[in-house]
Each structure stands twice: as C-alpha cells, then as structure tokens.
Image (cartoon, rainbow, N blue to C red):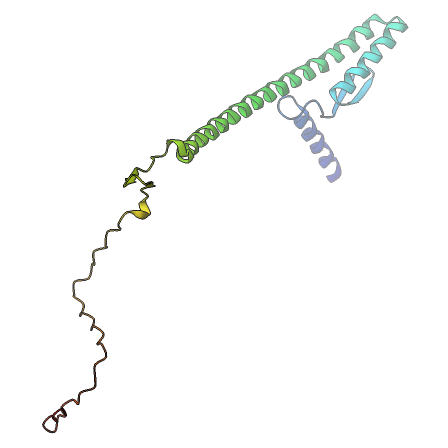
Length: 186
C-alpha cells in the first residue's frame, strides 16, 4: 500500500511541476496524452511527432484524426512560441542593462581621465618665475632655491647655549682649591 501512495504522489508532483508558467519550457520534457497514446519529449519534439501523426492520418484519409493531431501540435507550438518570446524579452532586457552599465563605466572612465589630465598636464601647471641676474644668465626660481622658514619651536623651556670651543692657549696653571695660585714665570 505504501508504494501506491508514493507513486500517486509523484504523479501529482510531476503534473504540478510541468504545469505552465516559469522555468525553461523550451528544454523541459513533457508527457502529452494525445488520441494515439502518450507522446513524450520537449515541445519541439512533441510538435514534430503530432505533425507526423497528422500527415499519416491525412494519408489514411482520416480528416478527424488529422485535425485532432494538428490541434495538439498547435497547442505545443503556442507554448513554445510564448516561451521563446519570454526568453527574447529577458535577453533584450539583459542587453539593455549591460549597455547601461557599460555607458556608466565609460562615463566614469572619461571623468577619471579628465581629472588625471588636468592634474598631470605640465603645460597647464603654474610656471616658475624667471629671475635675471646681471643680464648674464637667466635662472629659474624654484621652490628649492627659496629660503626655508625656520620652524618655530613648540617647546616652552629654553636651551642652554653651547659652549664655544676654546682656542689652544699655552697652559696656565689653575689655582687649586687648597691654596693660592702659583705665579707665572716670566
């Protein structure tokens, strides 16, 4: 009994999933219950099969069967055409979005290049002044040649002045702390 339940559930699930709308109808496999029994395949395969059955019925002189097979083929033909229209619409929308994204990237790239060209163009950069010295040579004044301002100290205490180096003098005896200073010889 358990196996029959699972079989009936799977049939209902299969029918529900293959029902119209959504998914890739073009490549989906359908089970079609036609007048001659089941026909299984993609919509294009089913269309081809029903058209072949319609030709066979027409050759046999059965106009009713011919019309019936043609109607079945037309049903799958309409499904296929609708699916292809949806695919085409999605493709066109995707292409439109891609074009918009590419145009935005192009605008951003152009703006970046314009900014870089404004900064990197040496002809438009401010030029240094030419200084004439005694008419002999023309020197260009550059930021390096200008005197540098001395940085102000942020420290509040003052430094002790450095001791100046003493020039060598003849040695003179220094007074000792214990007694009087010896006199220098003449």
